[in-house]
Length: 397
Length: 178
Image (tube, rainbow over all chains, first blue to last red; front, side):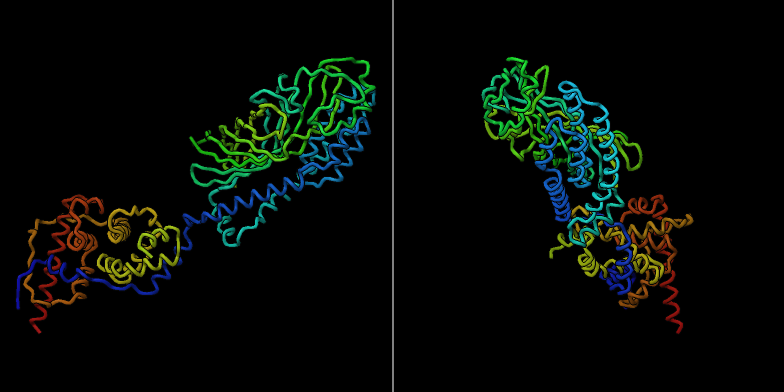
């Protein structure tokens, strides 16, 4: 049967349901090409959380094992005015290389304190102290360089499942998702509410915060374009001064409810027995190992980046000391017993970074941190907070 | 597994899901390649490249509209991009009427014969004929896809029809003379 047909129709009808299965070899070609491509979404969410949890665990264990105070440390330090050199040496021996780098900075700082005290109280040859200073600074240099690689290798051996670990390393070398940074921050401390951390009898005394500093390391992981998760370990020293305290020197000091012991009072009275009934201040000094967990939100990008930061910190008490201070002398009263060994702070701030080089940038981050449950009892409505300008050198890898 | 879930798995580069998509739609997409390409070898090349593009872009699929339609578009675009890279000379032709008719008998031509005719068309004619006649794109769409003028698309189509008609008639004449 012959028929005139539109040529389009002829092809359309014949090819309408045309379907041919492709040869098998083509799939293997596709498969090979797909493996060669950079994977777009490669880290499963559980692996991210697992790695974060593992990091935190690592930091907390480092913090608790190495950085928590050994009793010798504080005791030795304030067994005045014994040979300071011997004390420092003693500590260097007992501490392991990792934390000694950080602790010795604290020691060096305290040695300077000692220096001042000694000038006030007892005439002592100064070369002794200078020797100590040299000692600490040398030790400082060597241990920092040594301990850093050790720390880095540790972080590589995270207890992640093998598969997840491989994926992370592969993709993150490409995209520079991890950042490590050194952090230094001057800290200004103050507090909301009235009261004193030392005794409820000072509730109405004016108290003020002391300026100090904090330093440590930071590790950050970029979750996506906008959000970065950061953590780290910082050492921080804080102090609150309770002013206008009436001081009567004597063998038995006034029983202050939150001070556990006053070991040196009896010995040292001769230094100030000529002073009678002066007013001074009680200086409560405490230090923490701070483990922050913060989320950074990127607002603007470019050479200058602006970010908002929010999060919280776990603070582990590692220093606790109360001093009496008058215009003439400073005397340790011992440790306070109402500081909680673990407390938390809420952190807010901004973070401005400046790119120096492809993988290297500086950042300045003014942060506001409010502490919760610092004191366990007898402190009035005192709620300490501190302001710090955290500066650091960041390396992305 | 539902299709949407399968697509999401593919976006995560899950090899098993990718293979399943391949098996579900491979036949339809391969036939497109056979129609748009010069020969089977080129069709296989195009098919492989098209599927790689599909899996790389599958996370861009918005779950609006037909997934199969999306697959076809990506496949066709992959092929067109390849051919667009080659410079095809613009041939200006005389106007040929839209309606091209041939005198054929029912089931006179096998599918393979017709497919072969398409394959033998010059590159541009083949693409325009496929896009307009077999896949229902308008001349405006074709002009955008191939980066040519609408008029060029129209004249290419007319030329393609002319060539096909001529070949069919030649074939018929050959059959009769035997």
